[in-house]
Image (cartoon, rainbow, N blue to C red; front, side, top):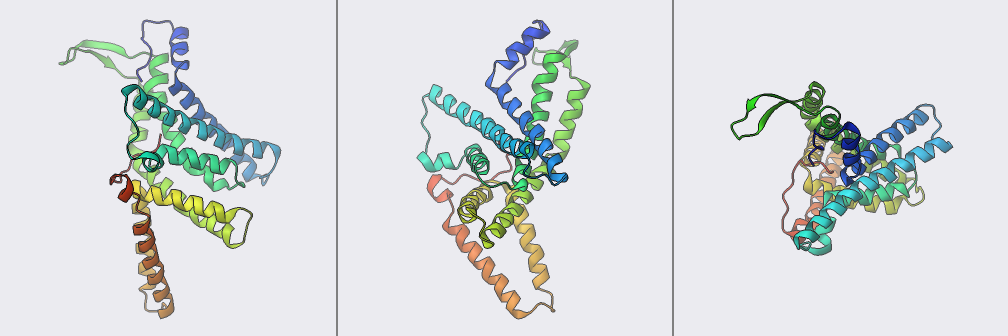
Length: 284
């Protein structure tokens, strides 16, 4: 969405911006960041279950659900206005990344506290807040100044804010590394949930099934998740290839890989929703 017209007074520009759903989406991401920071302070002082810690943790996921809910709603409204229906039905809807993250935000909201679950949402929020600040907040406060004549396309040439340029460079430079970090966190989180299931934490087996479905969907859609799993598999392959590794360990690892491949093939959602190609796009 374009920032408000520069001809309006600053107050009116802000009012114009604040009345959009996209601004509510931005506020949700800012809220998530502040709540994660507040929860992090409680975590570092070992006050995991204090009143403020519980409030910050739950509010962070309320904010996450609100942001992804806004994106899902806007996509639904855009299709409705265009007179288009959701192709593929419920499976296609479930294959939408934003629907998946909305569902997981609600799952984490009503589950036992797992601090690691906040981190992938937090990384996404950092980039969403940075991008919205660069494209909307800064131009609203400081509209781009016109310099020189018109561009070849007939539009006036403007000089972007130095801060906007800095934010743009930050997003461009760290995007891939941050998405790889998110992929690693989401995979590590699966092992954290698995550990809870092994020690029979209440509700952990149901959570393991739900999160496994989510991670399988992420694997089919995200090249970063695929890359993280491939790199992890290659490292374990290198370890078990060592001559000092017992044959039983090698055979066990090959069995695990075989079962993983079978499970991946059996749960390939592309068979049912038209073969969507994986990509590196981050959720909104």
